[in-house]
Amino acid sequence: MSFFHRFSSASHDMAIDLGTVNTVVYVRDRGIVLNEPSVVALETRAGVRRVKVVGNEAKLMMGKTPDNIQAIRPLRDGVIADIDVAEQMIKHFIDKALGGASRFRQRSHVVICVPSSSTMVERRAIRDAATNAGAVSVQLIEESIAAAIGAGLQVTDPMGAMVVDIGGGTTEVAVLSLGGIAYANSVRVGGDKMDDMIASHIRRKHNLMIGEMTAERVKLAIGCATAPEDEGIVIGVKGRDLVNGRPAEVQVTEAEVADALAEPVGQIVAAVMAALENTPPELSADIIDAGITLTGGGALLRRMDQAIARATGMQVVVADDALMCVAKGAGRAFEDSAYRGVLIAA
Image (cartoon, rainbow, N blue to C red; front, side, top):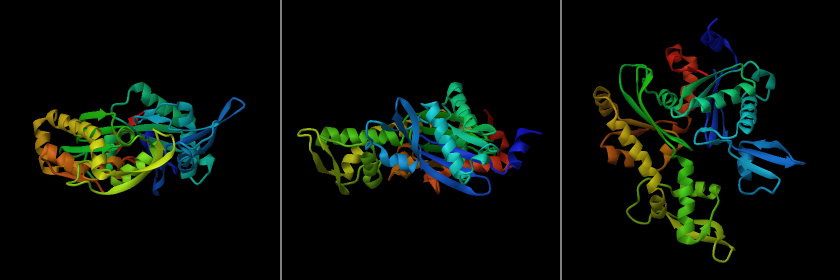
């Protein structure tokens, strides 16, 4: 019996978008069942390190832990940085997605999304982590293809489609046709880099040290890809004053944040321009008609579509439910036999 038929007949098949910031799990016939931060809190006692909490609870601990507890992200730039911790995280998320029944994990066939730029070693690490977590078999799908399927693009047709998936650790830019990738480019720029730039800007301009959670809140509240005509929205930001060492609060404007994000936004725009320059002429003609589709959490940054449209002169559309496109696309890939060719044997 072929892998595909075994896979399609299983009752606990799932697709996992193993992201740097969030992990999303799609279960066959149930859709998206889990969306939690890719964070693990580790507790060290008597020299032994063990997992304390995973996901939402672990994220609440970031920057607030005592010496014996460490909240970490086992993925960096879309690939596994700590395979042992990633394995525990995957195991936890699979069990939670299946209702806490670990026995079901032993019968699960899993598809995991990977960046197009990931190496064979990095892909093997992802496969090994999922296999060690208890999955019966593991297949991979490239994030850009999954994002395009999830966004509703007809990737199996002889028609060019361009998708830009802006995640937490990487931005994937791809031109797709006939179920394959005609051109792909990946840059290590995403939501994390944006948070870092916001924190650096506030530290330089206001002498205020803030944590990554605060930087993320600033990005979500007033982050934008292009500067407003005036200062825009103003919010209060709390942190530690670097001059006197005391807690302090400063006022940060929307224009300031746009200035802080200029570099990562510029890198994303440059990656899109490079993709257009390297696209075959016939596919370029299709993209003119279809436009560019944005997916991922970074696509929700205000005026990101306008920044790319201004640079390229093309129509840019943010996909519906952009955050879930990759997981939904991976799920559709194993549910619909028309997409069987996009799955990669791990």
